[in-house]
Image (cartoon, rainbow, N blue to C red; front, side, top):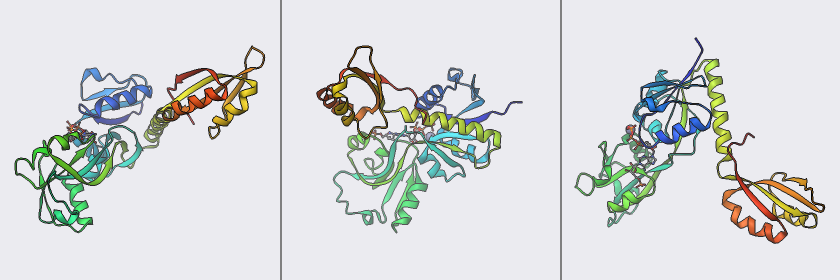
Length: 286
Ligand code: PRT
Ligand code: ZN
């Protein structure tokens, strides 16, 4: 039997879509429409195990799955014995303590003897201990943000992304305890064959992440303006310069960060560049 790497992913929820998109873009065709627990990729030695995110770290630690894609917060909460292999760049959020807006919060000492509602008691306890605070975590599994409003707790400790849930519940973020994003985790002891499949997966993920936010830019430049155009592009790894059929002109190709594109494009035009074309980059192998 051919060896396959079994990867646990969230069956539904916030990470599901981005996870399946990442696998697809990395060339691993997983027929998620089937909605069965275990699906084999059609063209890669991979099988995907669909689980609730809470179950992923332990399943990987136990070796029932070889690897998993899960929020760093879930791994940290459970302290499961799995290695973080790669940060995936989606599912970004932070875990924060928040108090009712009008509270006169003076610092972590304010939390002494207070009741803090959370679904992440493990991370919270470690934070409180590290700061020498004696508070009382109160575990609830959903709608943590309403706990202070209904008198269940004095503060909450929960996931924050845009912060709008806090605002609409009259809460104020006072301590950011950890930053999180989706991570690829793996069982610490994989066979050489499985390790190879995992390494190839990480290689493909890196190629996709390397291309994120980058554009391929082509422009026509009269030879007399080439030096000033190249000067605008200084700091960028070797732009390509090619002669054009038309005498006295050349074509300059380079990769630009999308963020700095608009700022750069004006200066490139001023320097003499014309016919600037911008193309998306799908993958970048360094
Ligand atoms: O069913 P299952 O157990 O698999 O899923 P789940 O309901 O436990 O988790 P899910 O799908 O809600 O989240 C999965 C993971 O996504 C989390 O463990 C985080 O790593 C990550 N993530 C990223 C988030 C958020 N952003 C997020 N905003 N998880 C939850 N939220 C919630 C948060 O709990 C709060 O209620 O969104 C609200 C805050 O959002 P803002 O934008 O208003 O601040
Ligand atoms: Zn969950």
